[in-house]
Amino acid sequence: MTRVAAVDCGTNSIRLLVADADPATGELIELDRRMKIVRLGQGVDRTGRLAPEALERTFAACREYAEVIRELGAERVRFVATSASRDAENREEFVHGVMEILGVEPEVISGDQEAEFSFTGATKELMGRSHVPGPYLVVDIGGGSTEFVEGGEGVRAARSVDIGCVRLTERHLAVDGRITDPPTEDQIAAIKRDVDTALDLAERTVPLTRACRPADGHALVGLAGSVTTVAGIALGLAEYESSAIHHSRITLDQVREITGKLLGSTHDERARIPVMHPGRVDVIGAGALILLSIMERTGAEEVVVSEHDILDGIAWSIA
Image 1 (cartoon, rainbow, N blue to C red):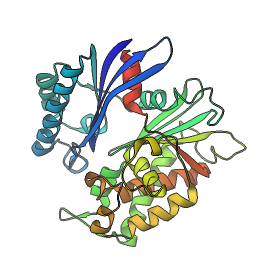
Image 2 (cartoon, rainbow, N blue to C red):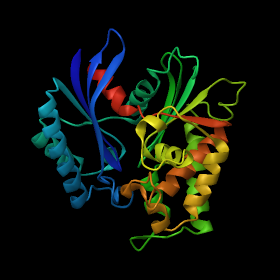
Image 3 (cartoon, one colour):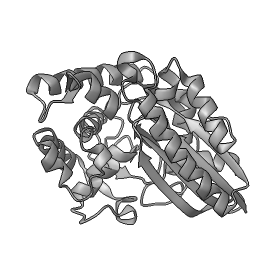
Image 4 (cartoon, one colour):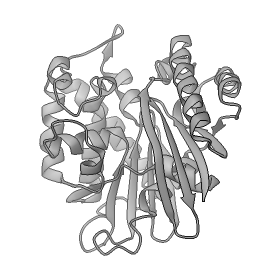
């Protein structure tokens, strides 16, 4: 076995996985998995730069993760940065800060690379299991972008588009620096137009329209915090419980009902939802609407929710 540490730094959160990987058996034994909401992508869609306070929040999380990696004795470390750092003019400041703390250079990967890691992480343990047979359409709804990956034993088509829960919230729901609470019908319609345009773009590469109807055989697999939070709400959990959420199946009707309630609620009402992370309270409405739009476009009657995602894919890449 090889002990590896994978770090995924996205627009909204930074996450760590330390695991023992056995390529011979395909087994990934998790030792530590944690997440912090740092909102690295704060304002990037508007300014094109990483904000100083966002960088400091991210570096503080990196210092914590460096200690965990040292304590667990990971032999190999890989740090992957995604949407926000791809878009930022001052990403070199981010790169130098991470190198100083963790001793590894963050790889600012392309959307296609991000999609492949997500697909591997989400489907490696599903392949060959009769309860979720392939082929798969994997969707990873992040803070700044959403990845679509279609494949079976491997990736056949992938596309990353610039719709994410943070990006769309800041673009359409923020007025004079404050989030409209709850959003107006016009604001919701503007988000929906952006999502539909992005889905049209993704469909140039990845088959989406009606791809997940029963006759077509694709299983829709959903990843990342917007999806897992919606799943936790649908399951009625008293607290966030990863084991209950992992591989749960959430229906289109459930997603439609939950999205409507989230978009019609206030900040305080969303904050009182037991599974809601404080860092997702303001952006979950946009994230849920992205998921609903994807399910409607693909014809999926349900989404299989995976807690295994790009982090697991990164871990396998260095095992």
